Image (cartoon, rainbow, N blue to C red):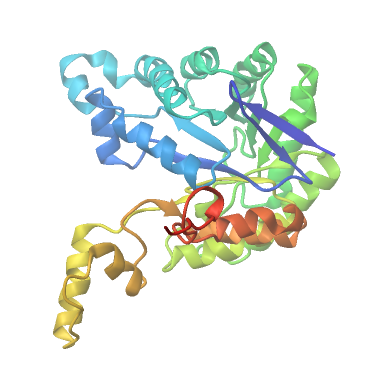
Amino acid sequence: MTRTVVESKTKTAIIGFDEPFCVIGERINPTGRKILNAELEAGDYSRVEADAIAQTAAGATILDINSGAVFSNKMAEDPRYADNNFVEPTLMRALIERVQAVVDTPLCIDSSVPGALENGLAAAEGRPLLNSVTGEEERMEMVLPLVKKYNVPVVAISNDDTGISEDPDVRFAVAKKIVERAADFGIPAHDIVVDPLVMPVGAMGSAGLQVFTLVRRLREELGVNTTCGASNISFGLPNRHGINNAFLPMAMAAGMTSAIMNPVALPVNQTKIAEKKAEIAAAGIILPEGIDDETFVTLFGMGSMSSKPGKEMEAIRAANFLMDCDPSGAAWINFNKIPGSHAGGRGGRKRRRG
């Protein structure tokens, strides 16, 4: 069976047909995260380190490291900062070094800049996943030699010089072209993880059915592992977690073996707590005196004050169990243990009195 091996210095993550679903944490990405982008421009990597730790704790088996920052303030001082080919190579190395200093989770090096990919490959310990190659001729000629040189697996995205097709047959043909071109470089199919491109179901009602059919074909006809940007399916819709929670197990059942996603349920902030308390007070509900914020948000189903695994992780772990990728349900049982429920010392034994 197809197995794609991704390694850090001390840990191995396997993406495979008969393996538990592989979660690739997406949080270390400045695109669309203004605060993180500003911190990186200022040389502050504390949030990157915290995100690496939180995602690993939530169950990510690989961490995606994206260096696509825009340093607007530095541009005003030095025009070179307007060029991602100048910014990203140095930033990618710094990001990888910081992440490797706090976790030993295998990495996925994510950039469209050749210099950033090569710097990432040079800095990463073990055998990282490279993200990504497309069916564009120029991109294949640039990325595939790096994949061969460093002997790493690569994400292959199903678009080419014509763009992203809405026709699933065209996207399959692009994936096949990449697999065949990779073979010319001596890169085996088991080192290619195809992203068949998930369309938003709100814009295309057949998007879910399309990707499930594509994943089956990719598995059966090309023998490759697959991944996707999991949240793409719910873009623009209300209750995105509800859509994602249904999509992921269905994709797994169709044969998808990994996803790039956020494994963490973000903490409830003080603004949301204040708004909820005002709503409750307006309804005439009297809260117990001295109730703490964590108890409050738990009581009213708002989540938690701390970072915890998200609902998508719950759906994935349940699906792993149901698909016999969790022997005896050990991972499911462990996932559902309530922190602090075991009294006493180590192993949950109660201390004897007196």
